[in-house]
Image (cartoon, rainbow, N blue to C red; front, side, top):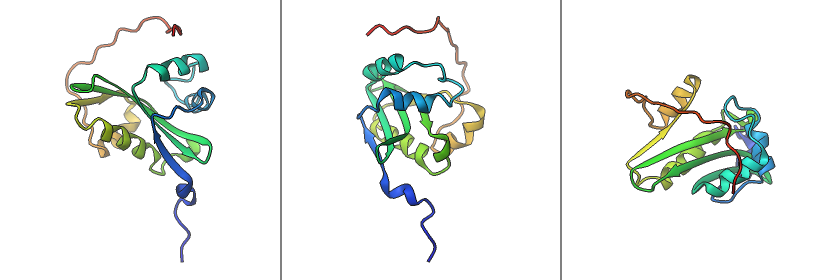
Amino acid sequence: MNPPRHPDRRRRRFELGVAPPSDDLRRLLAHTSWAANRTEADIAARIQCTPLFVVARDGATTIGFGRALTDGTYRALLDDIVVAEDRRGRGIGAAIVESLLRELADVEEVVLNTEESLRGFYERLGFRPFTGLTMVRRNSTPTVSI
């Protein structure tokens, strides 16, 4: 008999709306190209303002995270989808996104911004490239004011 492909799968749990410690999330985000400079204080403040998030845990260890900002009817933005580097390729990111999408099932349109290298991952989850123009106005580095 073959051993399970991912023996740690039994210990994993996905929690909706249960905030991870900000230092755990800081460790995950430190390995990204887009959020490596976030502070624990800023992360804690963003969690307080986020209506929907999913945390993946293996035992007591936070191994993945994703959040959504939404008006609940017309638009939602998936953001900060991240999985620990040593846990990638095991379905954790897909489970995080699918959990968020289930909660957003009644929202007309769900959008996200991603790197080209992750295009196939998100296409497998039903996302398609947007043909319109996305414009960004970048302000200075955000400050924590909560």
